[in-house]
Image 1: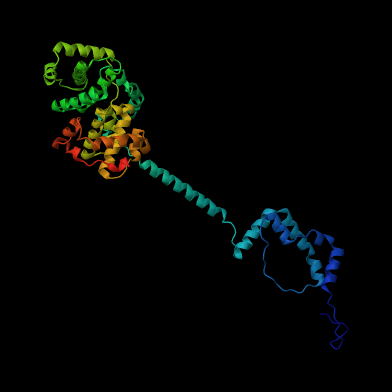
Image 2: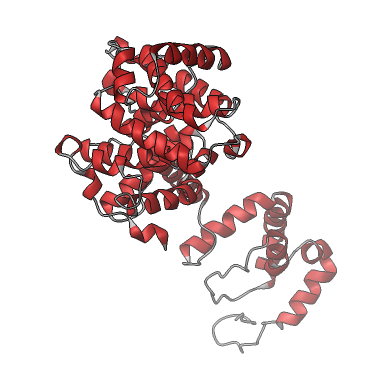
Length: 401
């Protein structure tokens, strides 16, 4: 409010101008003060930010003050229009002060990303930890050849295909059938146990018989001679002390002469080109049992199951490594009461659980009927204290369902 006249006795006259008149004067006198001014809402549309909320203040405006502050406003607005980034920073600071919930700060996002990455690395480490180093205990054992063991079994896996015979080779034999082969091998398992030979010898014997019969015609009365001679060859390859030929003739009830045995030995060796170094299921059994961290009970039961498969002609359709892996898998399921195949077993065997199920079901069936029928040699062998009465173990019937 202003005064007019001299002294305090003068009449008070109103000097306040209407705000619309002031704005009109400013527009006419300083058009750039309005034209260059951009509303907060427009600026925030550019920045993709909500409009700022500043504290509301009540102030009286006078014309001289507005005119005097116009350059200052112009300078501030010019700075804001030239630097959108600084405006965004200002808006974020204001919004944080007033408690607005916007996107998390960059350092929080970075921290969460690092935590997620660390979690993924920890999960990966846990997966790797599931595969145990089964050769760590043999690093100082030169006979274990830890440096070459993986290469050796990689070579076995590649060469086992060469050792497989046709699963229907018996059809090419005119006088032989599946049951005759089964009776011969069942009898040889008992002979092998009676002579107390090494386990490797039995598997090489059966392997030699199948490879020979797959390429050579044999009459029925010579089949037992093939079996005895194959056992002799396997003993010469695996054993330190080889049984005498006369002992083998005696155990065959003197059905053949010494000359017949030696002649058959030459025939088998020449037919197979003296190659007896192909892998059998036993080669893989030892490695896979180590991967399974087996105890005596699991080991004996696994060998019971694999020997039951030696008698069965239909199991020739599976490779030696798959037979070994399936036998151990079946034995673990039998003892534990549920299906179990660890990451370590999967890594060293090269077979996943679902790849073993079909073969394992057949093995459970053989185990279930082991003590019945004509071929009971394996059951009698493993129903002794020497083999921990493994034949009395209840089969894993749940795998048949």
